[in-house]
Image (cartoon, rainbow, N blue to C red; front, side, top):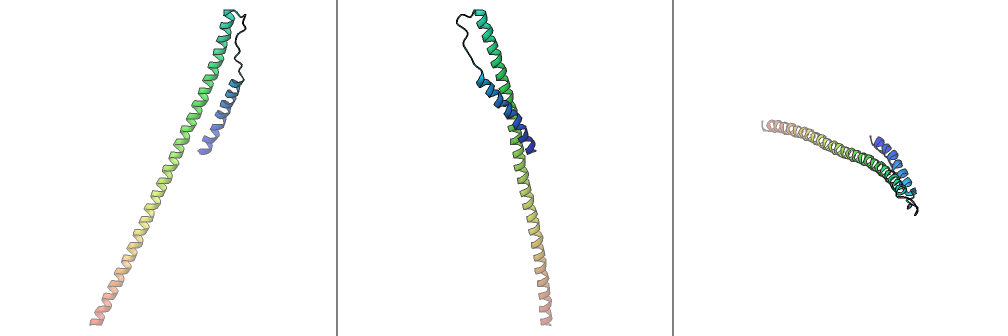
Length: 125
């Protein structure tokens, strides 16, 4: 499970890095001073589309990475609770073993007391 989560990080990370490199390479030049209003409008419309596309792609990468992060948190919580449960079960087993050992010692002591009682009666007779 953990290897799947870790493996899924790499493609999303690479996409994000590539997008950031693309964004850093975009040159946002001002329109030519003699450009018409229509030409400026076309330039800014294209620039807006490009930036919107890059923004959406970055948001998608971030959403993917957030989802992977959430999966990782769930996984680590599951591991923690599983380990805690295992520790509780181990303590329970140790407690049961201690009870069994105490019962055995108690029975041994009771046998010794019975034996001593019999020996005492023999000595009295």
